[in-house]
Image (cartoon, rainbow, N blue to C red; front, side, top):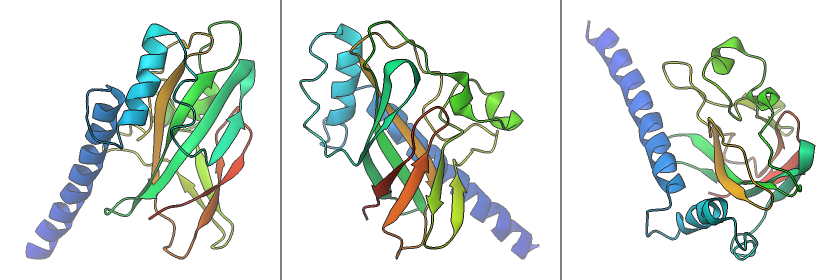
Length: 193
């Protein structure tokens, strides 16, 4: 009996860790925090809200990669950091470089029924670790929701929104991975931490 309880407790801790990471990420998207880690996200939110001078903060973060998408969308990856719980969180911003408002394609959610049923997301994203010859898919919570930005709004021309994707962490000796998001070009990013 104690072995079964330990397994359940361990699963509960993983769910709690994932939920906490998701809550922190979502809180960071609101732009209300004072931490340095949250300032770039707040800037991206402000750019979306007021639509004026969206490029003012572009130099604030190091850009690890820029992935061109459809209809003028540009996905800028600014961070790929390992978390203490064995996760890799990829963060950045999704910008509309086009001249018309645009919605992120539903194809970015991928083709897995479990992810699609939770609405639009970046759930189709994968990381390719060529060193270990492994592919990592976006993590999900216990209800099957992808641990990524979801329900993305229509993005006005020149505006951007903060985005994140969470994956299982590749081995510690893996420093670079390729990121692939449906409808976007792929790119190689460097992992920190």
